[in-house]
Image 1 (cartoon, rainbow, N blue to C red):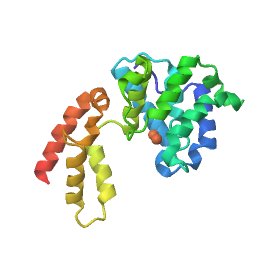
Image 2: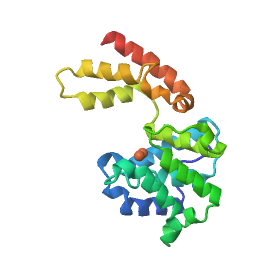
Image 3: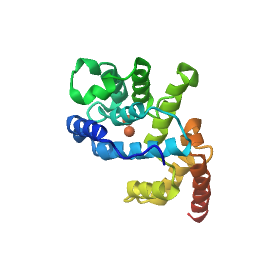
Image 4: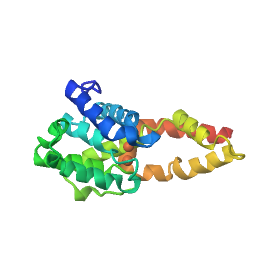
Length: 211
Ligand SMILES: [Fe+2]
Ligand SMILES: [Fe+2]
């Protein structure tokens, strides 16, 4: 591994400030541990695919992407982009890493935080090559690695108390996770996790056969 998930002291400082100003006020699913997970996943993808990226850009894109995810859920990506573009107005020390980026890199961070939401459907020709790469990286890491056992566990927790829990889970899996399922319509996501995808389909098939 050459792109280390270990944070430098400067990165730790940024993380702490964002946590106390934003993430500690978010809903449970979008607190700092979610961001740490996305960061680790992003680092793994960078290493697996030998993606060349400037560390500051990826770090800031990941650590800023959900700052407004709590009270402003519906527009949290719009607000985060606005935060990035206007960070220089704030004049706070912990944003130095952001405001000293080159303009095209600041733009890359802005595009990452704006397009991270899986409900949005960006198209390749709207972006520079690097922006497109970074957008798909954060979208994939935010959704997470497709590991059937883990997603099954999550679904079990979610459907736990329902009378037809297994039937409901099956319905959900057939809509979302089978090869034609909507989660794989995001081809860039599938491409980045192609090996996991193949194992996932095997495990899913097995589960559907037995349930
Ligand atoms: Fe988000
Ligand atoms: Fe997120």
